[in-house]
Structure formats: C-alpha cells, structure tokens
Length: 311
Ligand SMILES: [Zn+2]
Ligand SMILES: [Zn+2]
Image 1 (cartoon, protein in one colour):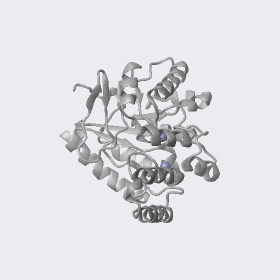
Image 2 (image 1 turned 45 degrees about the vertical axis):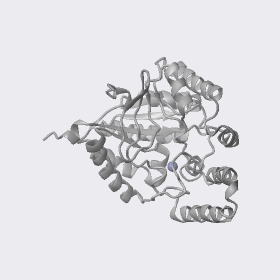
Image 3 (image 1 turned 60 degrees about the horizontal axis):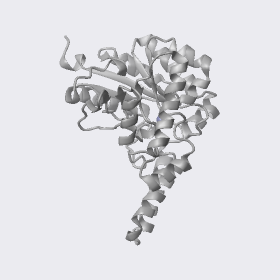
C-alpha cells in the first residue's frame, strides 16, 4: 500500500573531488585501494544502475580533466551531474585568510564568482548541457554565493545541513535551497583515518586548546582563528562542528540513516541524503551502500534536478 512516506521524494547525492585535492580520503583511497574518487563514482554509478536508484553527484570542476572516465559516468542513465566548486577550495591557507578577514571561508564575491563560472564553463563545455545544481565544498556558501548562483542560472543549491526541520525554499528568484536533512556520511561514519582513536585525539586537542585560551577571554577572535586552523589541519572544517561528531560503524550508520530518512520524509516531505562515493568505498568497499540502495527501492527516489519547486 502506498503511504505518504513512500510518495515523498528521496534524493541520493554524493560529492566527488578531483585527485589533485590532497584530502585524507583521497590519500587513503590512493594508498589502500589504488583508486581515486572518480573511480569510486563510477563504481557508485554502477550500483545505482543495478538497483535503478537515481543519484545526483556533485563534481569539482577539475574532475573533468579526466575526460574518458567522466564520459563513462555521464553515459549512465541513473547518474545526474551537479557542480561542487572548481577544486574543493584549494589551497586551504588562502581560504583560512578569507575566513579570518572576511568571515567567509569560500572567499570574497569576486573570488566566488570566478570559481563558480570556471566550474560551470568546464562542465558545460564537457556535456553541452546547462549546469543548474550546486553544492559548495564543505557547505561553505553565504549570501554572495546565492546571488552569484542566481545570476549564473543555477536552479538548486543543496549545502545546508538541517537535521531538525528542513524546508525547500526559494532563496533567490529562480534558485531553491534543498537542505540536507539526514546525517551526512563523512562526519558521522568511521572510515579510513577518521577512526575512533583519531576522533578521540582530535577532541582532546580541541579541549586542551580551549582550556589554554580560556584564561585570555579578550582574545576571542584569535582563538576562533586558531581553532579554524586546527580544524583544517585535522581535516575537518565547515559549518558543522566536525570535532565532536557522533561516530558510527557502517552497520550502525545505515541503521541510523534509514530511521532518519523515514523521519525526514514524514516531517519535511522529502529526504536529502549525502553519501560520498569516496567515503563509501573507504568504509567497506560500498557493501553498505549496496544494501542501502536495495532498501531504498520501496521509496520514490528522484534526481535533485527533478525536485518540485513551488514555493
Ligand atoms: Zn566537498
Ligand atoms: Zn569521508
């Protein structure tokens, strides 16, 4: 019997970073699995095809230098393309300075505009199709990003993480925000270097740092900046506090995700899921993902591009 839960849309998304991005996941994949995130995306796309689950993958612009592999991904009928900044906001130190001076990790208007147009151009040259879906790397957009996306013809942005109550809203004329309303994998799931010991160590460093600086309350800005630097060094930055995540093993994570997906469908009328191909491969060679896609078959899974946008 079709229930309300089954009729509301589920969106499955993943972010894919080019091999030049020297993140922990990329390094781990190369060293332990001999793969990069584009290889993982191809495997993810194959699983999507097998279970007929539409998936929307947000790629950094630099991924399109790997033309042959990107063509094979583009040919998959259950894979939709979105954009994810040009190079995953590299190098980090420039963005830390932006954050310190402008309170925007992504950067000033002009920088963002150049980055967004560069990403859009390389993708449109590749596919000959308009690129209309966007997710800023590490959820780092601000009002400038929304203004630029509207002016450059984007229709959907999905980089707000909202686990309580989420709404699909028109944030600029013709541009809708579809918040992620289920727990994302990267910051909740143990995988690769993000294991229990490391998370405990990170928390200890952050606690020590806080206690050292607690005696100098007037230096709040310096403390905040140093914390940003430490978070970056630890490979955890963004609006979400990655230093205190709830961490799960694969089985527990997918149990949680199933519950949260059903909750989101009833509460918000849709579920937006973020499962990175890289993280899924590192965690267990995508076995958990495959089982999850099988579970999703009872729902109405849609491409992000097919979102009904009325408000
Ligand atoms: Zn990213
Ligand atoms: Zn990850």
